[in-house]
Length: 308
Image (cartoon, rainbow, N blue to C red; front, top):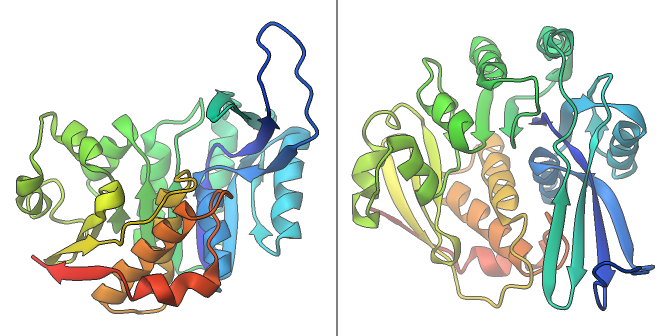
């Protein structure tokens, strides 16, 4: 099993409108509500690949209950820590070919709630060989929270991946105990280094500090595929050109593919191709963090991987 942690989950609500009437009433019956957040999205795709994901994080109030019940309705185990604050809503308004989003900040995690989570890691991660941490930190937590989870994973011989950004990503990369896998893009790598980078220099950058001791690095390049570091080897991955339907959630889908293949003990090439295939399949559907598994083999064969 794979544990995926979403520290600041949400109830994702989407409204499909013909027209968004500003400063007036807009009515719709086309509404979707489901559990959301980057780690939860990873779990959705893991389930479609045939894995048994376990979800955790912090959940509070009726919205927290909605998330737990929604995951269980999908046949996915929820091991959230209850908090006093209310889980957030994230609203997407789809109108006239545009998407307007309203994202709540979410609850503040109290110190005792953070300590409860860390003290329960044995129970939360029971039966899981891989721990994935995805998304931003809620108020009340610092990057030390993620660092403690990484330390726990290392101590208990569990593979640990982190998909975050900004200062938190920089702290993870420069920490004494680093994650086993990260999935930044080129801009995020430049932010970590504090300077502009050229694509031609990326291979050398991944082989040097502070990246060299992180075994798996997937540098996503959108439609151009990815550059991937696996231990002491660097690969270029090329994906076929497709007409994107909805790219939202492709990074989470790609990460799910990589974690699934790593958990299955696949080769470097298979890990990369599984990752790229899942990201590509997500692009081809309107639903976020969803792949049409019947198309997997077709696109898997079209991914080109070359060591550089």
